[in-house]
Length: 135
Picture 1 (cartoon, rainbow, N blue to C red):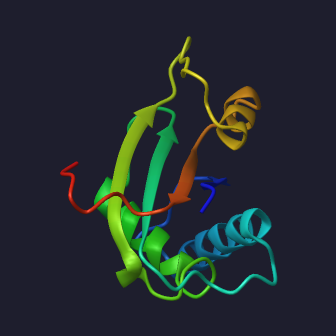
Picture 2 (picture 1 turned 135 degrees about the horizontal axis):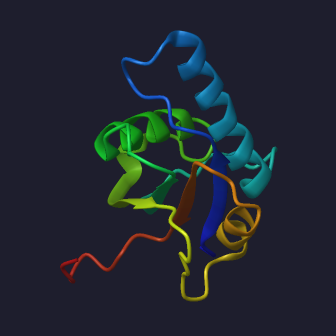
């Protein structure tokens, strides 16, 4: 599978956030995934790997594990049939500071950085790693 990458703008809503904020975040994740994956494509029904980076300005909230939970819940049924299919997860939180430069960022990430988007999550879905190799 060719890696699928997209950006979700805004501060992630996590368990414990107000219901309207959680629903808005879920809708934003699903819209970004559908735009990247294709509106009519069936959800992936095999093992996969997900990497994401929460880019933020200033103090970072929420916790990265809570971002993962809400992100995966939002992608369930849209991008993959069940979040139990995710066999590898790479998660990172990165503060956006003056002079932040990344080596050869994928197009969606480069566009978000160029637009000076304050807070966003970059998501990449790809084939699972070789199970014979440790991370």
